[in-house]
Length: 475
Image 1 (tube, one colour):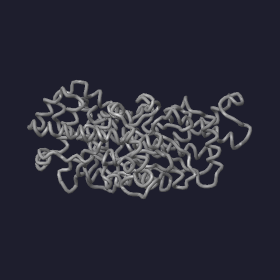
Image 2 (cartoon, one colour):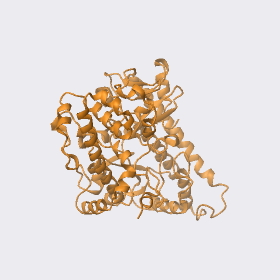
Image 3 (cartoon, helix red, strand yellow):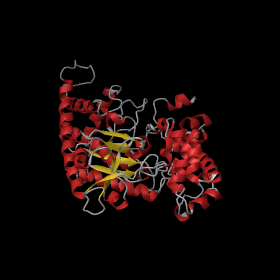
Image 4 (cartoon, one colour):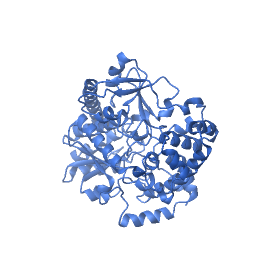
């Protein structure tokens, strides 16, 4: 089977524009530390922003629910849906129209709506609380500061959760009953490839849970580790029969397949774990590859993020290697770091592909059955072989195939929000928006404590809070 056939209709990782940035003239930006210019928001400002977002999410859900029945009015019988003369089938068709809206689903125009209608009718007709299930997200990995400011949930995560809440609330209004959403988180699912720190994964999921509860109240969205749904709840989802399937899938991953995804996986490994300055906190010998002695010695006094940024940039864009050498000051250290990162990322790519393909490309496969939920499955990546499964724009249509864990939010004066890796904004006027260190924060207390920014913005201080209030996922 060819690589193109294996990957046809599948997005293994969310899209990123970062490779385009590397092909441009970055000039001296590579040697800069994270942007020093910043603006600040208080705890009261965050509370005001939350209230605005809640109201906007409700407005968007009401509008989406109202569109659903009206879209069916002029359809000839049997045109898109079956049995519209029967209440349960009609209700399922109206729910389908929510997912057929192009602001909701990436595959809105390609959904097998008759199959989806049958699925929704069965879903709403079964015993047990109707629950949407989607596989989404693991902590931000910054690639040495190229992608993000830090590992914690920020405005991009709140935006994505807001989009999901619009869908849940719109379905509740159409079905006239409570709907829940279960999010299966990916840190444990892909640990063998990315080495995402287990304690960081737990913290990130708790942060997203706090955001969801602040926007919708407790119990509407539940974040659950993938390993809890299909395994023993440990830091990895590979055990028992899944370990056998994983080894079989890995044996079938060719060099051609790995080469096709290497550049993307390179940016997704938790290099901060592997290059941790404290040896006790460091992932030991990833894939059996020991950290070079020269690199270990340099990390005792050097900046780990700076070294990762230099090595990753050199791998993706060798023409920038001279500038990267200036950042590090030692050719031996940089060359050893590049060789090590290349070897680790290659094996990570092979394992990521195997982890993905062992479940047939379906990130929720088996999880809803294992949990006993009455589940309707959604996805964050469109899958041609699963045309009855809505693929959700978690960052809205303008966000495309990007996911919040790979990007920052950039908020404009009218609240318009765009997303991208940090390096994409280096050349612009954006400032980091930070939270004041003291205050009673309903969400994002972890950002106030750590100093990690909430987002980027080009808005003047006096207009910043208003812009953030208008930056809702529903705006």
